[in-house]
Image 1 (cartoon, rainbow, N blue to C red):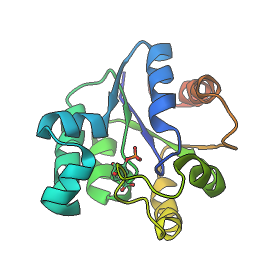
Image 2 (image 1 turned 120 degrees about the vertical axis):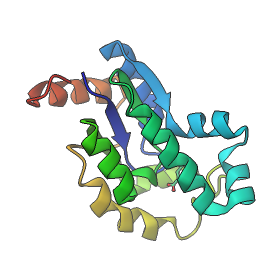
Image 3 (image 1 turned 30 degrees about the vertical axis):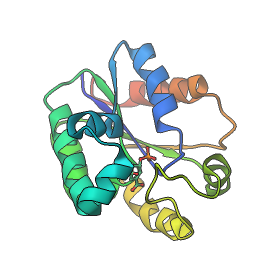
Image 4 (image 1 turned 90 degrees about the vertical axis):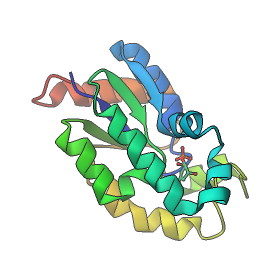
Length: 170
Ligand code: S3P
């Protein structure tokens, strides 16, 4: 078994799909942001406020590294995690499979609304960030092009089909 890492922009559906997928695969679900928050005893917003984005990214990478000690996880990463080469390398070198939930911009904007204090990177400039990160997300092993209208169970099913096509025993 190898860990499955869901990657993609904020609001792409990683946590919802990850929960269902973990149930289907009989694995443990990990939301990386929740793990970071639990370890530091602060919300993501508080971490950004106290330690800056660099502090958050360091904690995120440390938490990601912890997941690589196991092989039975479905991990929903934060939207910025897979945009960093060091994190991609951690996933790759540990044998993890990365899955890009490619949700359209309009759907994401609709889901997240005009502002979200718990998402410090969600702002007016988020569309530029969305476009800038696409190239990174596309490095994932699997890309699922979504309309945004799928139920999490349907996306999880599509991921299972794609995982079964891979040569590894995921
Ligand atoms: C971030 C996305 C968030 C969280 C943090 C930074 C980003 O996770 O990790 O606010 O840089 O895109 P979600 O993708 O779960 O919102």
